[in-house]
Amino acid sequence: KMAAVRKFTTEDVEAQIQDIQNRKASLAKGGPPPPPPPAQDGLGKDEERVRLDGGGYFDSDIYDISNGNKYANYVQSIGVDDLDEEDDDGGTTLGKKGTNTYTAPQLFLNEMVDKDHDPMAQYKRPTIADREDEYRARRIMQVISPERMDPFADEAGR
Image (cartoon, rainbow, N blue to C red; front, side):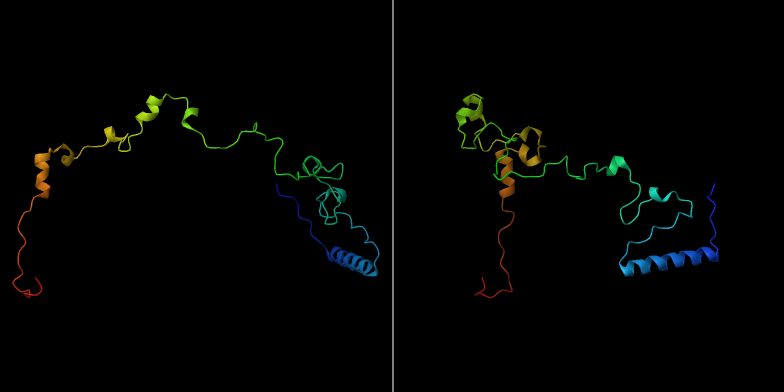
């Protein structure tokens, strides 16, 4: 169902204009503004509405400021020193560590010293050139034809 829309008469509009003019005049004189007129549009009581001057109804679960300080549950100061007392990791220092601090035996540490060792070599797909022996690999280095002379070149350009 749609809510019934209230039609304003000319008297209602004139009353609103007069109210606005009265409020404007009282603000110009420096006095407190008169209270707003009662709600006529059916949206609720005036004290349940939120107004620009801060009055009205707020959800207390979200906007509850009972003690007047919304930052009461937060840390409001930062320590002067650079060290965090709570994040102390036991005083470990970062320094150069030797190989004697590793728990693996030297046999396993020296095993990986070979710089040409490729751990993925067993998974690489072999090519035809990899399967050739030295005798058959010489065909790549073979000279197919000797260097030829250009008949149109100068004798000095040789």
